[in-house]
Length: 328
Image 1: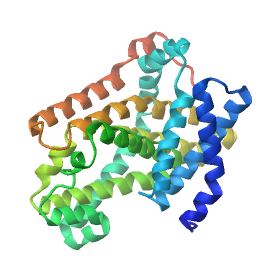
Image 2: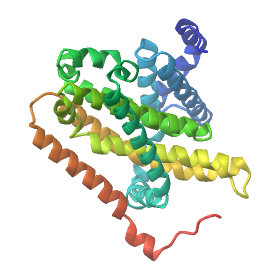
Image 3: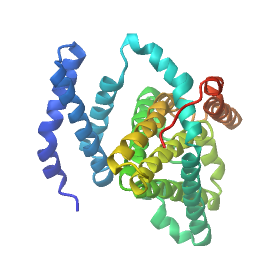
């Protein structure tokens, strides 16, 4: 059971303040090696607190603060120095797409779970309209009852750059959470995938019943293919972690988790720049009527095609000439 929000903040505030102070000093370049390790530890605690706030205190100031704090810490810890750009380029040219192709069965299972949730959510609302009261957020239902898209007011509330930044941060949070919940023997990842699918399917069915499906497709067509693909890939990474805990094979469970976890982390890290790109699209292109529906759909299909073309083909020549030796 979650504690009251003030008690949660009071118990964790000192750790957050320490992380903020270290981030400030890190930007000034004055951290020692011991402090860098402390920074990493405090970031992991803050990420855990963020997952807790996402579950129990969504939309609160504490949740927003942790979103921003974790985004700053992530950028500070994982931003490579200039001398490592060659290894970064090698990672995206070979390692990331090759890792995804090796683990396609997990990504496929993740996609299957998401689609299952999508179908369940849609069927429930189409079969029994009152199901929307359970599966569709109240704010969305209110807009739909008025015949309006809830996305129409996005740009009137904040400028596109703020919208893009918030979307990118939220997408990163969902991606990390989907992956990290695999530590619960994969059950947490399964829940998130099915639950997200159910909610999206229910919203789509509600819009279809009210004659607003076209408006929903107009909004999601530009960013949806890549954004949903990234969530499915993160789900596949979470399932990999869960499988290593359920069936470690001949290795000790901790060693199996470390081995498979490194491979899973590659999938999550590889998706990070694509989340930033799609956040820009979702903030500037998807809302409003500045771009016609056909242009949004064409952009979404092009981005989705390029994304999966890259994942399925990049580094394939290197893989053929230098086959990887994998641990059994």
